[in-house]
Structures are given as C-alpha cells and as structure tokens.
Length: 312
Image (cartoon, rainbow, N blue to C red):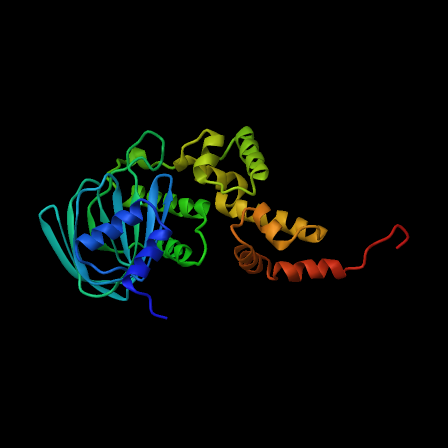
C-alpha cells in the first residue's frame, strides 16, 4: 500500500509533539522530503530522535542550547558539515558519529537516504550543579558509545512506546562517557562516585519501586527519592543492588507478573498494566525473552502441577 506525502506527514505528526514537529517544519523549509520513519523520545536531561530514510538534502541549524551527538546508522553516508569556520567532508561509515557543542551554528548536506540517531544532551544533564561542556568532534568512533546508540535506536524502532526508564538510563550512560572522554572537564571533575547507597537510601528507593511498579518510573524520580544527582545515583544503585536501576525494575515487574500468573485470577491484559507494561504484546515479548516461555505457557505449567494436600 502506498502512503502519500500528506498521509505520511499526518502519521508522523500524530505521534510527536514539540521537537518532532519543529524538525519536520525545518525539513519542509529546507525542501528536504519526509523521512520514512521519525520517532522522538524526550527524557529528563535529553532527547533522542531516530530517523529512517530521510531523503538527501541540505539544512542549516542555529546554535542549540544543548549538545548534539549524531550517530550514523547508514552503511555509508556522504556528509558535508560546516561549523565554526571549518568544513568537513567524508564518507561516514555506520557507527561513526559527530559531537556538536551547544551554541554552535552548523550547516549539513548529504547526498543519499539517511538513517541516523540524534541524541540531544542538556548541559545540566547530571542535575548536580555542574555544567557539561563538550569538545567539537567530527567523524569519530567510540566503541562503548556505539553499543549504547544502537540500543537506543533499536528501542525507538520497536512498534510500541519506548521505555522511559531504559532510554533515560542509556542517555545518562552516554553523557557519562562524554564527560569522561569528550568534554572540557578537568581531572577532578571526572572522579566517579566510589560508594554505594546508604541503607536508608536503598530502602526508600526499593520501597518506592515496589509501590509504584505499575507506573512509568523514571531515573530522575528514583534519584530524587535517594536525594542524589542522576550522575551519582545510577552508579551507586548498581554498586549496592548489583544491577542497573532499569534491570532491577524489569526483574521486579516480571516477578510480580509470575506471582499473578500463578494465582490465575487476572487476565493477561490486567497483569500487563498492573506490572508497568504498556501493552499485552510488550509484556508477552519481554516475558518470553527473559523467562524462556510465554505468560500463557508459564501459567499452563503451574495449572497442571498437582496440588499438595496435608496428607500427600
């Protein structure tokens, strides 16, 4: 089935406020065609945009109030970029990226369909009073950042709402790597937290997670409960609990789901919503991937087990 330009624009705009509409307007102003797919997720301290099939073209960007990391997904992308009086031309390979500091105007042109991930990182992403300032880098590679960017791109490519806690955790990890390897920070600023959460901090956070397992939890809220900055919280949580906040929350959701499946008193839709999944299909696919069986298969196994009696 063919989708017309008008239908495509309405489809894209239907799912996206703010930044996405602004980007579509910019493409239209610069006579660049609409991409095949455009998904945007906003998280505290950042924004992630996944683009598929953006036609070749040329755009000019004013200096933004945040830093921009552009990660190339296309196999080869012929790219020309001009900023701060310098022009860069190269065939960017898949996995290469550019880092543009805040406040720097730039001009971009590319001559083939473009698949990419854009990550916009706020200077106050760590919410600890310090300002993140990055260095101007063009066409570089960073293996650890590449893994994170591909995970973000995959998450935004799924046919369901992206998980806010997962996306924010990945953006925070990206920001931490940028701080350590691609920023203007002095050596003392780069010292990472060495201790874990206190008993009271851990208790407050874990109790909050258990009480709000059906809600869309965020890293910002969990760090607020612990009275810590985002920068310190995620690392300290993992040191104390043994896994990252997102992984812990996912495990708790699955354990709650298993308990409900064993009781067989709720439908899969009810279980999905009460354990924080946005749909039954999301719940089913996640459960199968992590547990090794579908919820129905898991439930069937327990329903066929012989019940024990006092005499048996």
